Length: 105
Image (cartoon, rainbow, N blue to C red; front, side, top):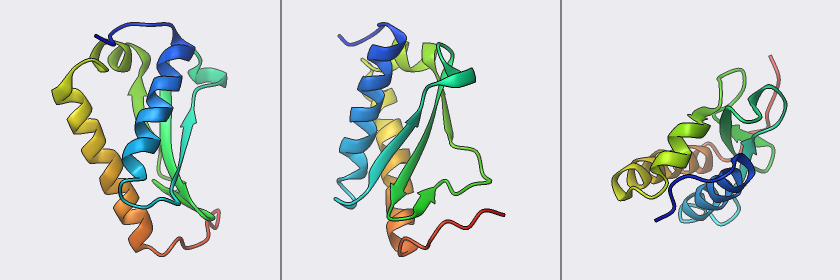
């Protein structure tokens, strides 16, 4: 159904998917999908932002998703359910943390 696609199209789909599921936990959560620079055409890095807080919080790496993985599986209900669960857990953790300010190490 939604499998395949160009890198930018898949990035838009991923951004919309992440934000839709994060907002089910907290309407103020925003999605940060890294897709430029060395990632371009290869992968995506996903974080959630609430105020100044980020999850996963740096220096931890973002949730890493390969372009081919997302493009091939975005039409799979089982894969989407697993990703939605991961995103919602991040949103819950971020919300529970009370949006502590990000302080670089």
